[in-house]
Length: 193
Image (cartoon, rainbow, N blue to C red; front, side):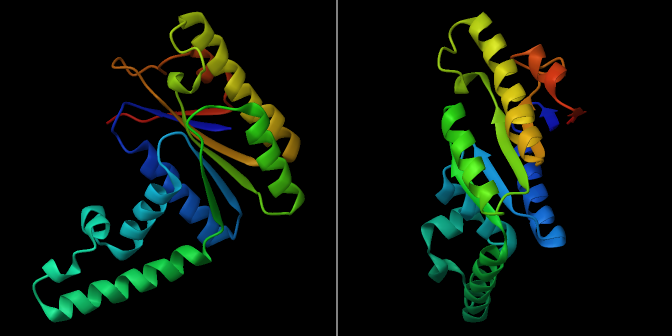
């Protein structure tokens, strides 16, 4: 399990999304993208913006009539259609999962694995709020360690999957919330912004 650690708002989710795209496009791998923050609709809107080069704000509003020139408007509509086709060709399954539920995650992964539709698990991202009792510091510390061990060993290890995840680093640049995350991953990549 490769774990990326970076401060808040430094592009961890974009990095993971780019990895999902790259692994699906270049290597034809099946990606399961578990997301603790973005709904599936928001994730695919982000993908649409990425491939069409149209700002999310404009995509959300649907106000293409605000684009001044008729030719630019037609180009935007064409870019959206092409981006939609591109997204359909990707082997990325996105699941919004704000609370870490081991049984649910395991059953989803096991089902996809049995169908030969799972090569890579991306978990975006490990955070204390995904622990049911996030107010108890020791519960967070132990829970985060158990969660990463579960992803690394019981899902990625037992099913021979590539595992990629992210977590937040503190203001001092260390892995935030739990040393157990740093200790339990296979490779830790610290991103300084």
